[in-house]
Amino acid sequence: MQYRTLGRTGVQVSTLVLGGMNFGKIGNTSQEEATAIVDAALDAGINLIDTADVYSGGQSEEMIGKAIAGRRDDIVLATKASLPMGDERNHRGGSRRWLVTALDNSLRRLGADHVDLYQIHRWDPSTSDEETLSALTDLQRAGKIRYFGSSTFPAYRIVQAQWAARENHLSRYVTEQPNYSILQRGIETHVLPVTKEYGMGVLAWSPLASGWLSGAIRAGQEITTSRSGFMQQRFDISVPANRAKLDATEQLAKVADEAGLTMIQLALGFVTAHPAVTSAIIGPRTMDHLHSHLAAADTVLSADVLDAIDAIVDPGVDLAAHEKNDTPPALLDAARRRR
Image 1: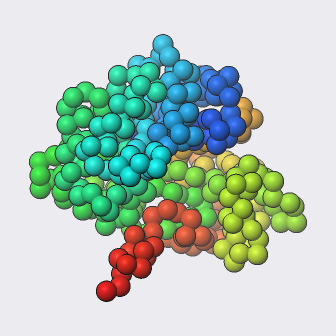
Image 2: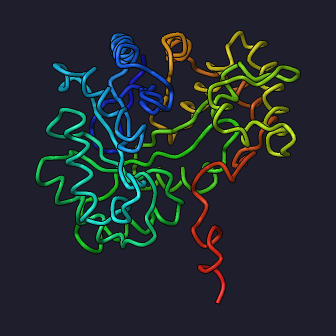
């Protein structure tokens, strides 16, 4: 396992991060299975675990809390908040009112008195940066969080938040968690240059592109992955973006074969090769998934392989930009862009 410094925090983290999104009803993973996965990941050298309050309505946090009981101090523990936790309109967002409550709820589920990294899951356009950063700074000073970061923020919002922190003498986001894979390279254009400029750690989510780069999806074969069962639109080959992904996947499979790599090694090795990226988040649903991911822990892609990838998917290009969850609100809500 390789380790890197998380931004400018001085904290050393593994280049593979164990993500807990599949723990619970989302991935149909039991507590016994989740604990076994956590045990194996820690034994392999992974020291950062990432989850969120919204994953299976809190089940993921509860399962991780039970799995790490008795060894909390050896783990860099991260979770997230701001996505809706139920129908109550104030149980979401980046307000002080909600973040204080959400963190207490997460700590209870995790069985911990603090988290090392607390992340705003999505930018909340209804809440000012000053409001959110002030609440996070106070939670940090109270010892409930060590650091805080953002997730899936557009580049201009990252810059704005850095400015707001400096202007109001508040602590700042020290990490960003963006969607990044061979098939989704848009952040290379704006986000990664900005995070590098501000010395932020980068924890990339969906490095396997929702399973497209797992090796299980090939032309002429029925797509039967777990994600395809509840995200059918993202795997419908009649959709032009999905046909583009399938074509790229076929070409990438040839590159992997010629290099003596699995598709997973190619995909994870690509993400961690970028100098602005700290780690790639893996989300195994089974032990077999975990072992296939761990096989990529020390993968270093040669310049020839990286060049071959660039020839298939251009740098800075998203093959399915609408799937990244970072579209500006003004493009999603007509009322925000029309008078």
